[in-house]
Amino acid sequence: MVRLFSRWKGTKMQITKKLFKEYTGREPENDDLERCNCKKAGLLGHQQCGWCKVRNIPVYECYQCSKVYVHGGKHEDWDKELKRWKNENNRNI
Image (cartoon, rainbow, N blue to C red; front, side):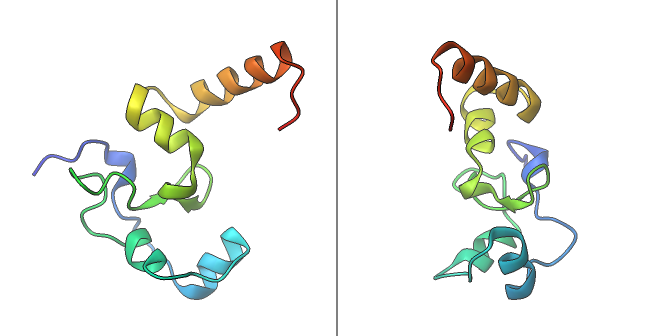
């Protein structure tokens, strides 16, 4: 099996309720923990599973992970693009 993006492999650490709340500021709901610890993260049908190692949040909550999946590139590239867009449009988001 080939993973679409290796950065989305399940993390080596197990995401527990305590860690999830510590990093996200909220309690896990429904299948949050299952998606964060998914062994198939990055495979077809599991692109939104896994843990974003850059931001320490679930992949499905990371705007950059979604952009990286759709358009390629790196988190840092999309951070620069977002800053440029905010400056050009006088946005503070």
